[in-house]
Amino acid sequence: MANTRSAKKMVRKIETRTAVNTARRSRMRTFIRKVEEAIESGDQSAATEALKAAQPEIMRASQKGVLHKNTSSRKISRLSARVKAMA
Image (cartoon, rainbow, N blue to C red):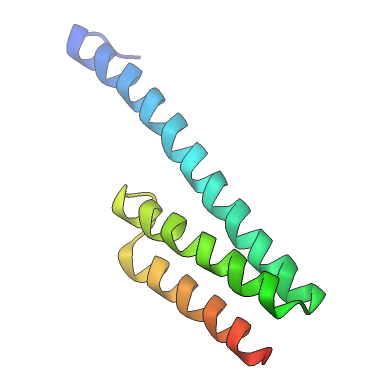
């Protein structure tokens, strides 16, 4: 357990940062799930709309440090390829 004041403060900061990152990750996964559900249903217009909504959310997660930049680019690339293949 933390002994010094600074170490105790860091524990508090890490807890809040973890909560924020968890919320960001969950929000991003929700947007991704909406795209995948639209792809499963076969509705291309809904899939493209969901993808347009998910792209900024995924990129925001990478900018905030929740995801690596390449991981977010890969996720967007694969989702857009799956949506494009529906046509």
